[in-house]
Length: 323
Image (tube, rainbow, N blue to C red; front, side, top):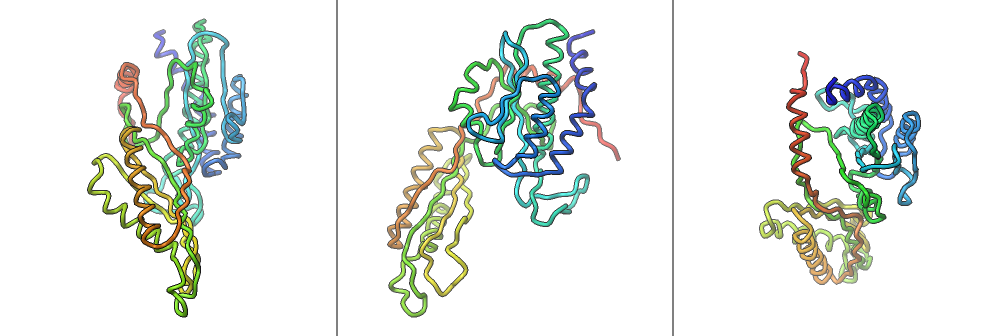
């Protein structure tokens, strides 16, 4: 039997149990760094398949690593299992149909992402054992893919230093290898501190932190014309200063998500966004506090490995569709 036929038989032999794992994760959608039920399911699956399991890696309680084998090259397969807020959705329904209104949901398929990666790691482990090949297979259960940058902490702590090949995937609307490109990004919280005052009786005594946030966003919007086409800046108000319009808001926070094609371009763009924040503080007589929430580098691809994987996709053919 050809090796590739052998490994697909190993995949098919365990597909049902890993589809069930995916379904269980789907039913308990948890957001970044709170994926306690989801990681427990993955830990149980790793142990059932004979992996040596290390939990709580890098001080992250929902991060896990499973390893099989003791010598040879290290094959890393990365999986995730975090959901997104307010994306609750009934499965198999092609219109907006929340299971829980305003609840979490696996809107981009991370319930599949962890389970299928773990099935891949299990199948490779079984194939190596069946063929007497010395290699180590390592599954990384990575929390907080959506905005938490968990893999950056893993890289910082050297968890990938001995890896020979790292493979990841993501559910999508197409079935192919995505050649190594992604945007570097940084999420930064800008908190403006002003001075409260009664907005009718003594507005001249106030210094509005909310005004500063709004001026910052206006400045960033004007920046868009003068940044690279591939760059992006998005924002969300984390604290708009309260609910009383007759009080000058003394504190307000906006999170800016800055994206660029590579780290040098990102650093330049972040510096310009920070300058805009300083200008907004100057215009409003407030002070700005800057806190980096997370940051990730751009993806660096492996073209030979990508081409091999694409050939395997071509052999498998397209996804079958029912009526």
